[in-house]
Image (cartoon, rainbow, N blue to C red):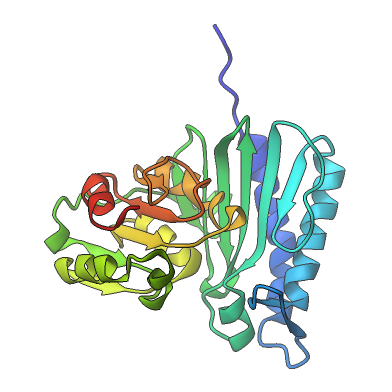
Length: 263
């Protein structure tokens, strides 16, 4: 019988990494001397983003020297089947404007599958995490955790839908389809970034979708959604965080949502 790998040690390490990053990012949040640059793709990056990623990379180099690391701000390092995927500050635009909806995303891919995810949002005093086969959890730490699960909503007219922003869907030609879906739902909001997916994993939102995302935006989110009982796919219906965009639902609504807004 083949042993099924467990990721308990990796999950504990992810919390340790989040603790270290949190001390840095919280100290720079709303700092008057925060340095902000515009990257070539016109997105923003702060000195806190860069310092946080450097911190995670240095700790992973010491604790997981054989693992590869993929981040938002620096070139990938290492090779092998295990890849840590880091977004030091997801929601940088919120961070630099003083909006508290931002977080650190730490994910692990093993043999091509997202197997672990942790989202730490210190300004919201909240964390969410999951490892393959271990369920999804939320709280402030491993010792104050509560298991979370997606909703049981089965009808669009009863569903809450978070769709990032209406204008972001123009580029993929799905703006009208998304707005039409929003009109069919009980409630529509644009919570944005990681928060839409964490609210979905907790059962507070039933559908979340974004038309353009990078790998580092999604790897940590996918295991949390799926371990909470939901589905996480691309707009083409491909499972996982590898399609360049995302649709997440409680699972019960997924096929109908893809039929309405999928590519």
